[in-house]
Image (cartoon, rainbow, N blue to C red; front, top):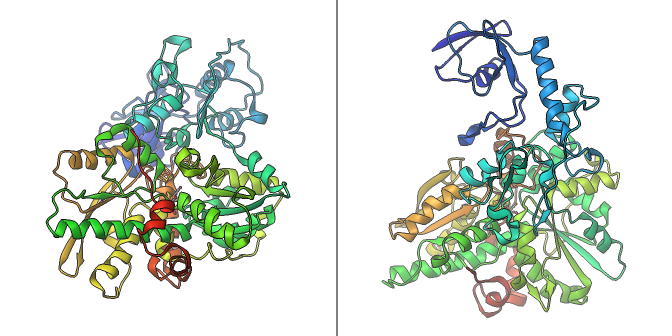
Length: 579
Ligand code: HC1
Ligand code: SF4
């Protein structure tokens, strides 16, 4: 334990605590551009690079970086002396001297930590004439790298290497030339990037951003020959409100449906419907493999792995090419939605496939890439035409001058807008497998579940395990969120020592509620927990909470698909993987 004073407040902290953390514990926020701690997840980026966090330590000649200075007994710290403020301004002016002054048109305008800091420090001119760096722009189907805007905070490296263990981004070159890049300055598209986008989620500037598809969506909306329908992912409703100043965890499902109609979509549907459909297919696949296993088939692939997260799919395709037959073959709900919309629904609506445009609103950057995978198209016409993020939708709503807060709640359209609570909870880590258990239990045991909440599958620990009693059969379930955690479970499967029957994996910390297309959390990961709680509230409030009870899913199988994992389902709703 050490005692010290920070801005005349006495502070008691554990030995080894940095001044930055100690100050925070008494409500003194020392500004920084590079440091980021994801508290609930035990990840910290602390390269000590930006030097914005300098403070004055009584008795020392030099200012000290608060992020790299440990507290010691009796220290007297001043975090805002004139000398400190002047030093911060100079540091900021130097950082800005080689930063493109493109704020007006930058994707991060209004959300940029560099811009906010410049404003906070009252920077009005840049006295240094800096050389501008010029790197090539790198545009993948999901992510744009504009490294002229990189301030070398290294947060993206933490996300890519420590959280995700993808190992795609690292600093290359030296001095002024240094930049964060894939190896050999390769384009992201040629690298092992999974497009999870967690680098984008933590980037303080516009150096890393999502591909903006809103112009293409608007062009489709104004084209009278097109019927434009939209699907909204489960996680969007729990976060969109943040873009309009609402408290994190505010559910805006009804306002979102209303806004989408005002924007001009012809039909407003819900990806949750397709999540219910995914459970029918994936649940049937799980029970099929389980039965074979119980019958003594030694070749059956268990555990089955969920396959709805395209970041995760990209990860196993690159990192575990010897295991491509282990994951479920079920397409993601986004893609199931597109496949059904452009076959069954188009026929019902009496329109040609090529005259229907399917737009998805996703919390995710990898979904942009997923929608462009060639296997998800018929004669070059994609099942999902454009995928946009929660942030892009917020932009469209603001651009259309819609007063979001005052919108009345509206319902989704039918038939593809009806969903159960099981579809909703896909948004949270553990939710996909909980939804699968609700259906698989009833199909397997032929008994009705008295309680559908499987709290043992919920939570935020990176790796979780639970056993569910299927009427005498103990079904062992594993859950991982974050690809680094997934890697650990996968290595067990690869080595033949996994005890699980089924594993759910989502690439983003928290699952889709923590997707990289959601409103920026700026390191405050408590926001993810509030979104998760909102999703469980929506589930609890639903009249139906098991996917197989969704009446429109029942009708879809009766009228069109036949049975889960049947011939037509296989053609439309299942896929295969590539190394
Ligand atoms: Fe997800 Fe899914 S839950 S992957 O996170 O299975 O993106 O929300 O839409 O497809 O349903 C994302 C969310 C989403 C799919 C569903
Ligand atoms: Fe996308 Fe969700 Fe996977 Fe993240 S967890 S990559 S948001 S699908």
